[in-house]
Length: 216
Image (cartoon, rainbow, N blue to C red; front, side, top):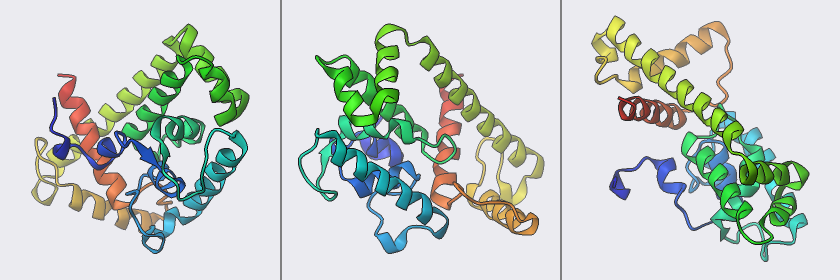
């Protein structure tokens, strides 16, 4: 078993027993859930506000929770509620996986599918129903996500192998240099930087490399 202290930020947070609205919104944005509001990266503020507002609405309307936005609620319910809000490019993979796992956990409880309906309406209810009947469709999505993750790892390794020097080596790419050059390229070409904060990039590259290694 991997040491808890050696897990990545989002792997650790996926194991949280409870979350409040702000923490969940930040995790969906691919940010540290303990960030102060003023510390949220400028390119994530809009997304954070959308998530915060939408999560709050579902919590209020569901009748499942008892407390306000600052109240920590059970993580299974919070992550399940967040499943339909996942952004595949911005939400870290460990959080995506935890959201799916939470939907499955609740779907298999007595009256669980009705709870899912309260947490996310008819759409989330149908996801729970599909999980109960046949998981192959959802597994196909997981396989696609795994393949995309490994592709990122291959590209990072290839970049380090071809460029070398400050980019490191294929066995040990230097994320900081690669990230800085990506930012420079985005400014030069006027490309969007949504979902490309330093912490998100570092975490995705780290997880992608781990996924590739574990598949060997």
